[in-house]
Length: 233
Image 1: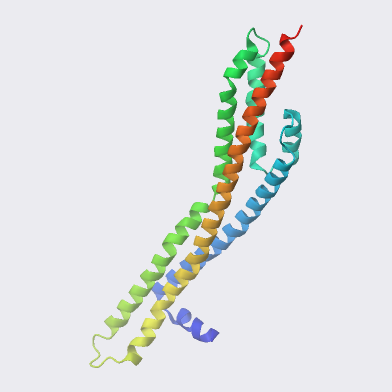
Image 2 (image 1 turned 30 degrees about the vertical axis):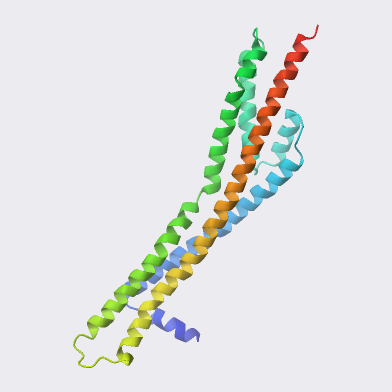
């Protein structure tokens, strides 16, 4: 049975063999991207769950300690960007008159820093996914192109035959159809992997948005607490 399947591959024309080789390379790339992204997203999800399990009502120092231990979580990058902006604001305005009021007004700066960090993390998580999208779209058309060319070659070769029979036509048609089969074999896993990873990235994006909102509230509380301490005699 294996020989029956491999026969059309071996005896295919030069054009069909080129398409089959291209599809094979696409298949290798698809599985390489799948293995790499699966590892990256599993690590990011695992560390994000651990990160969130140890937060909630904690101080900034506690958040920072968690981020240092869980650097593969995208939340760690958001926290790092927020703390960097926070430290810059404190250096510029904390010791000035009405510094606390200015800090409250500049909390959106911290939110914007987290948004930029979230955008960078999303780009990292989505890297290589366009490759899967391209393979999903191109592979079936490459297979169809090989089939059309094979069928056309078969009928062109029969133009001189007085009575073409099914025995003459069937081998050429079956050989041509192998490229369509291989195109679908490559495209279906690529489409599945692409949609699976897009869903996982969207889940992480939602976690980043919730975490950024939580951190914004935490910074506002820190500023308010500092105001109360400074106002006490």
